[in-house]
Image (cartoon, rainbow, N blue to C red; front, side):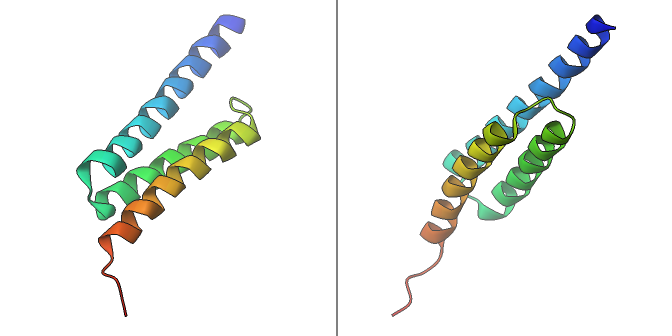
Length: 84
């Protein structure tokens, strides 16, 4: 029983880490707000799902999501032209 849970937790944890890494790379390196937004949404969805299943603490997920959104908002602000 414990082994089954450990394996499931391991795969979910790995997919969350991968989703956040992909989103961060998209935000910091690709400089394309459209694709970055999609990857950020996917990472946030996975984090929320892990919280609901008890695999990730809610404050940890909130912290990760907040940091990711801060980077995405900075990219979007940078892409928008300055209005006078």
